[in-house]
Image (tube, rainbow, N blue to C red; front, side):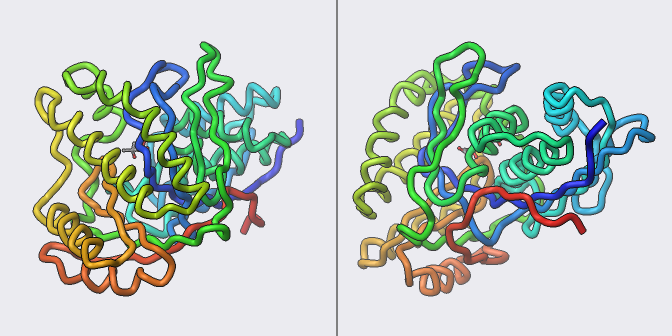
Length: 327
Ligand code: PMV
């Protein structure tokens, strides 16, 4: 038996080319690729303590006991690989609101993959960690890496090639991110249910999947050449197209509130007036504004003034998931 307590941290990420829909439910394989940025200031810290005396896994999120669910499923994969059976106590803390479209599942499962694999003595590559994190949540595969990250849909039935890789380190293009919180409660429909509902019922879903490859090409080349305007147009198009596919589901999924729309217009007005900024919106009502270095203060001030905005967070791009000393 070889296990010990281990801890890890991981940053949330925000997709610029969105992931919405799966090609395999059991292995959680995405129907198309995606591109994201990993954030510095929004992070999850997770401690995994294997304990053979425990009858079953225990999971605490921000101090509140939760059903182990997918956390237990990811632990099972790691235990199987390590040839171990001990149940674990998992304690996870987010420094940002959980479940409100701020991708807490991404940082959470990335931190879990790193902490749990170390707890069971496994030395895995980033690509293997990305595959494990994906089993918890599709977007988590990207939070293993820092900076600009691409997730591949892969073609293998095993899912072995459905992993992320880094496109560019954060320091090479230190964009800034402003998150406008327009609702701090949990979202009504989680992303897993929302994307499955869209796949089943939206006539726009096939068009969505067919057009992601073009957006990936455009975003990849915009990132390589630091072409902010091309990245802005591609990211806004991807976000609005994803929401269009959800709106056309039956019944339609409407994640936005009036403040979401106010922020979206405010960002576009700023960009027309020459500020380097664009918006993106996930499966929730928050607006994320991505800005050129030095622009976040002005963007945060404007978004903070929009009616219905409760709070504004400002952060930069950050590093990938990493083990940290257990406390
Ligand atoms: O990783 P999941 O299952 O929570 O899905 C994430 C879906 C979006 O956040 C809406 C888009 C994305 O690519 O992160």
